Length: 64
Image (cartoon, rainbow, N blue to C red; front, side, top):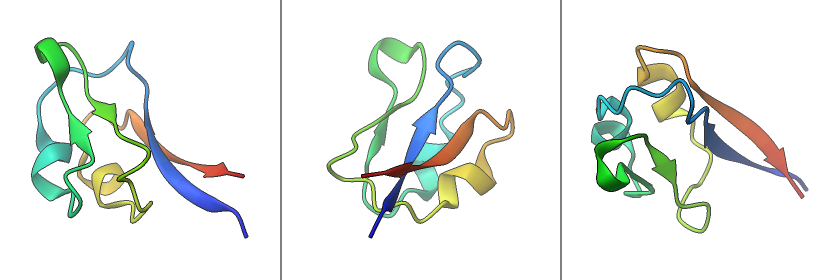
């Protein structure tokens, strides 16, 4: 069964931190304050970050 993982469009992310606040697994960080990055090992694909992102630059992608 395929799983979903969050993916950030790093070229469009404004590093506002909204996604970090709602992630239940602390799977998102903003290294160097430039853009959000998802730790795929921690991400459970719940989609909370997708709904919270004001710039709509996070999506859920199917993984093998």
